[in-house]
Amino acid sequence: MEYPPSEKAIRNYCGGTYRGAIDQLDYIADMGFNAIWISPIPLNIDTETIYGVGWHGYWLNHLYQLNAYFGSEKDLVDFIKAAHKRDIWIMLDVVANHVGPNVTKNYLPFDQYEHYHQPLCFIKDYNNQTQVEYCSIGNEELPLPDLNTENSFVVSTFLSWIEQTIRKYNFDGIRIDTFRHVRKSFWKDYIRSAGVYSLGEVATSNTSYVGKYQFVADGVIHYPLYYALKSVFTDNDQTRKSMTTLEQQVQQNELYFKDTTLCGTFLDNHDQDRFLSYTQDRLRIQNALVYLMFSDGIPIVYMGTEQNFTGNPFVKNGAGDPWNREALWRTGYDRSNWIYSFIKKLNQIRLLLKQIYGETFFRAHQQTLAVDQYTYVYKKGPLIVIVSNQSFQKSKYISLPCKIQCNEWKDLLSGKVYQVNRSNLFRIDNGSPKLLLSVA
Image 1: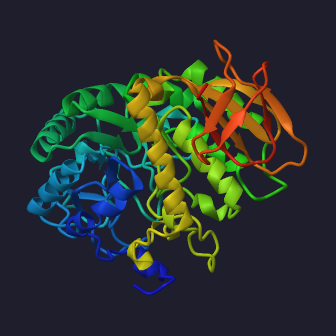
Image 2: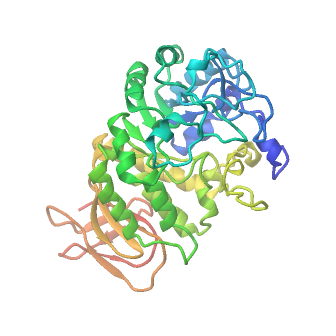
């Protein structure tokens, strides 16, 4: 594929396969990750549309056939087995809300009029829950017929399919696309049939709205936090928000979520602008990644962030879809990129904390210690996390919590040991992130 790729090229298949993924599992494992989220596996529409073909996996054509562009059934089985040998879990992306663009009448097994919400309508008001659940997420140019998930055949087909698919391929979890676009009672049965960890996509910044869906799935993709992180760590001096934004989001989390430690946190994904298009400041990138990896939730790093992907700078809206979905192999899977190395270090620290404190560290909820315009300090279990979104000249002091006298604190990032006075006052001199553990 040429670089930068044309829009036509990037909206079509470009060669990624399960076999290719097997070959690069060590690239992922060496970075320290122990789970991979993969695209939906059923056969998709491959007829050319104004937005290309269904190379991404979200335009269902035939539920019972695998997408041959990704590989054979044996390839998929071998990929999952190879991942499991490295103690890497596989999360499958699933879609039950809609099918592909209306360019064929041969959707299988959903080939009857009553299998779809009728008449076809398009969502005009996302505050209208009836429209959200019964109308299409597509538009007049690209209709995406909305499946009738009240129809008994549609329901029983999906419940049977997800149960058999999980068992057949040994998937470890599911990411559920367009979660808010289907009634909650359907998802409860679907998740029960799957029998694995479930993560629902509710793509809005409204914390109270998103939080309600965690009473349906194990977790939700934390979109409210995503919007907060993007606003806090941008290089744009005019739009950058105070670090108090993060602390306020934490308060909202505790109010509306069942348990944020089970939710998926992220800086960007295939549906959103590349995070690194908003900042190329090394300090902000480090702080954002530290917060992602050591705040409440299950951190998700989007493919390409470790290689400083920013999208296509030569086109309008080039940080978003489809430019945020370019192939990774043009980088040669470079492990010397500083972001790759930094993420690897953060994962090593996460592993160390797991070895010392077990899973209880990750299930502990963060507690704010101090916050101002540029710096946020919080406690997560025994760890003190200090993140900033800008350098500053005047030193700051915070009191570190300790049940007994703690004279020394070690920064797990730099390895430096800090001495503190009898009041446990710690001085913050710059905007570098810190991960502090008491050593005395």
